[in-house]
Amino acid sequence: MLRHGLALLRAPAIEVSFALRSSLRWSRGTPGPDALAGAPTFAWAPALLRPALEARAAELEERYAIAGRMAGLAPELRARNYARLEQLERLSCGLDVPRCRDGVVRAADLGCGDFHYAPALSRWLTRSGPDVALRTVLRGLEFDGYGVYRDGFSRADHGRARAAASSTDGDLVRFEVADATAARLPPQDVVTLQFPFLTPYACLNWRAPLSRLRPRRMLRRAVAALRPGGWLVVLNQTPREHALLARWLARAPVTRLVRRRLGTDLSPDAPQTVGQIGSIWLRGEIPAGGANWVASDPRL
Image 1 (cartoon, one colour):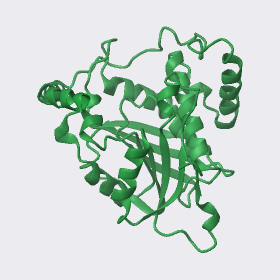
Image 2: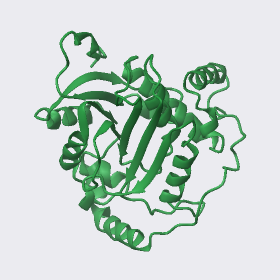
Image 3: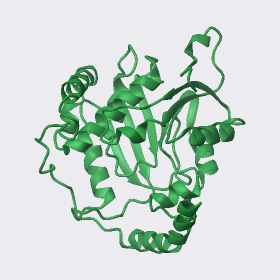
Image 4: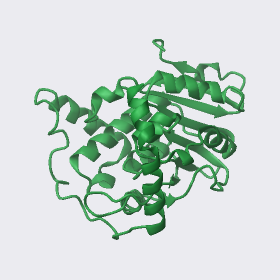
């Protein structure tokens, strides 16, 4: 209660800060490669764990051909991409990501932040399941794009750079400063919400304005953007958040296919991933004979 009370006290200052940076729209241009890009990925991990982590990262690189998209990233961000890719792979359980008849996966990631996981998400969309898609068209939308980082570049600067680095091998990845609750989206094969703000405390804890907290509207827009048979993929920080999500989606035209825990020690924030839960929701009903699609972690 004390933490929630302190967060609420910060709300007016957060609103003013958001309004100021949104009006200024600061941009310094395109960031170059990180100065530490050549350093070992898992230097932050205990020495005894590093060989196992490096071996798992190498396996992910081979399956998803992701190394080239992360060449200019700092070691910590490379590790986060490996972690996110492992989480998404575990969540999809070997199922083919939905795609159009032309073999292209069209996807939107709502609330993408600085899009640091664009390499992992774009590769997972293209190469998940036994059949490889021809290419992925991925849009990352973030309403708060003009916060300035320590290097002087804005969130949008970094988002655009990471999107551009992931636009290889035929994939097209874009970053947009846009409010997902108002943006117009054409029919999508996949819509992802990666750790969306569902409660006031989560919103304020990340210094996002309460005036933009519209979780139910965001979910309605996400579901509405899916074509029949498309996937809504949601990652939540806690079981409580996932329960809230499930309650809000109970009347939506979606069916939960998968629910799994997402803990991974590939992330520098491994302890924080222990309670994370991912879920995949199908737009429509599971087709006849498709009962074996449904999979959940028995501990949930």
